[in-house]
Length: 125
Figure 1: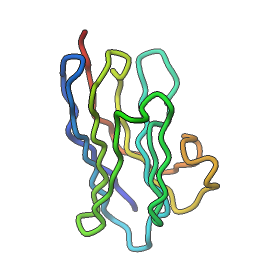
Figure 2: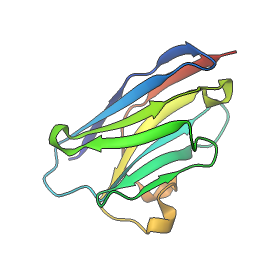
Figure 3: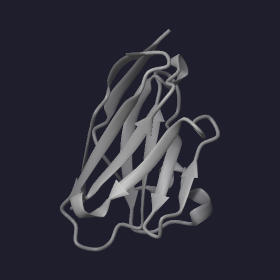
Figure 4: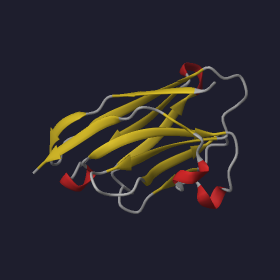
């Protein structure tokens, strides 16, 4: 059973940076796509960034130019580097994974059957 464990969240001031990590374990087959999602209080979960096993990357428009998704296959770890954080980035951030999906839906939450417990990011103004 694939397990995902996120870490790296915290509280920062606007303009600050954080790097989130997600360690994957309990699988043998190659994961097709991993992604970061976030959910703010009272809002639906939204896709932030996704990376396919062939290196293709997709970002939500709200984070383009500020966030960078990357993956270290040797460490089975997914990262999200977040720069120039804004108060509207405040949310619980989830790492998600799937064995297969339509590439046009890489930021669609329902495409991912696996997710972690989340790590909280709070950005103050």
